Amino acid sequence: MGAHIWGWWDCPYCGQKKIRGDNRYCTNCGIQIPPATKFYIDTENIQQVDESQKNDAANWICEYCDTQNPDAADVCKNCGSPRSDAKRNYFDMQKPQAEKVDPQKKTSPEKFRISNARLKKWGIFAAVFLMILWLCVPVTRSSEITGFTWERSIDIEEFRNVDESGWTLPEGANLHRTASEIRSYRQVLDHYETKERRVAEQVLDGYDTQYVDLGNGQFDTRQIPRYRTEYRTEYYQEPVYRDEPVYDTKYYYDIDKWVTVDTLSTVGADKSPEWAVPEKSVGDYDASAPRYGAQREGEHHENYYVIIKDKKGRDKKIEYSFEEWDDLSLGDKITYKTHRFGG
Ligand SMILES: [Zn+2]
Ligand SMILES: [Zn+2]
Image (cartoon, rainbow, N blue to C red; front, side):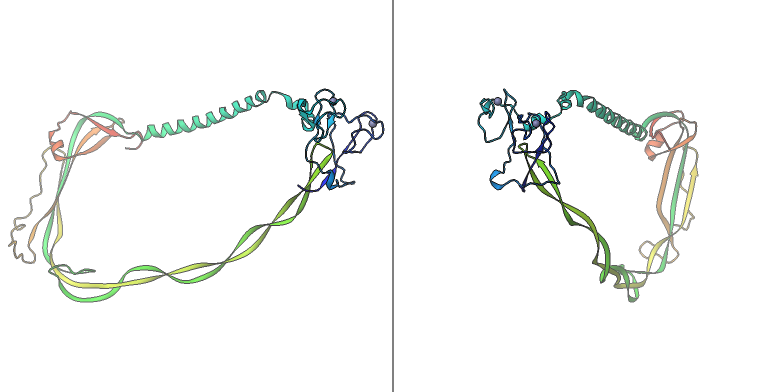
């Protein structure tokens, strides 16, 4: 609570201006201060309230004769009615009539408008979401089989002696040499760099005086701090890293191993898949001690497809396992899952 200053009021009957707030009667015509009189401040004529007279409580209004009575009075100074009967104070008398309109009636149309806008927003959101869902969820379609295709291949491997290098030495390898080489890099702190940035700061610029009507002829004065934004340059340290190589032992060696040298492929558009037939020499070797140049069959690869016409009449390939594919016949109806867009 700050210092109190006197407020002023004007007499509505004789027109007397600036009657100090501690006067209950017009200093000119003597009429009692009317109940709805509003006190005001005069910054040209600031008069401090003595400490002994300071009062924070608003005047109360007599329920029977509308007299403004100070908080200290237990009975009306005009008619002697008890304060306990009073329902209004100074501030209740200041409220303009317009504000007494039923607040619910005033706010409900606005509330309705807000909820309507929200509904619209959520409606659009939900519609877009459902559309995306509709596009993404796979659909089941059925179609007749119009054809079959298949692909088979056999890797041909040859026993060879090859030069290799690596971070480990495999079993059976013939080591030539080792070398210390860069295997990876790690980041290490090299140094710090001083950098600058602008920072905003709120600095106290001064105080604004605010006057608060206490409703009893006095005003409380409050000092409201006022700030301004100031910018200053701040320096900070930023770490700078460098890549440091990590060395490891690399092995250079030769080794005897099976190496893929060829792939024999067969394709067909029927239901009679066949493997390619390798040359006679493939597989003709001593398994316990193969000679260089010996050949054998390596990995086998196989894919089986069914051809159908999609919704737009285009050929569509669907892959099956051999067992499933083998059981299917031309004209069989199959169901498949697809997306609404794309394939
Ligand atoms: Zn007067
Ligand atoms: Zn009274």
